[in-house]
Image (cartoon, rainbow, N blue to C red; front, side):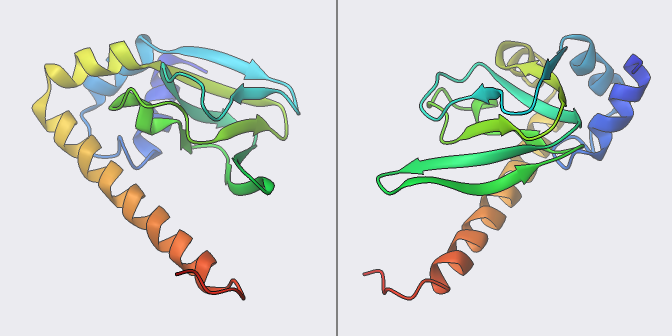
Length: 154
């Protein structure tokens, strides 16, 4: 995949859809490709966060561990961004991501991303807007899941 192909893929990711192609090219250039086999873990819940990933090819499960065990809370496929919260937060990972097929990712280091948005207020705004929409959508999905549970949460 060429740098221009990576830029085209980044443009399809909601976080980067409204960002200038020149900025996306710089982001793609400072990123690296990584590959995982089925069953391999990309990162674990509780790990330190140093990078986010865009799925170029393949699928992965997003898993949360709770006192009752593991629960698959989502799936990532081509065009999905995973670990995006780490780009703006030093908090540990909130989930584990495990490859379910051969998985090719674009690894975006936090320090490269932060340098890029520091020089580009519009990019910072667009990323923040998309992140807020993601948080809203995830909260709504969690509320729907909880509403289907037979026990009442107080």
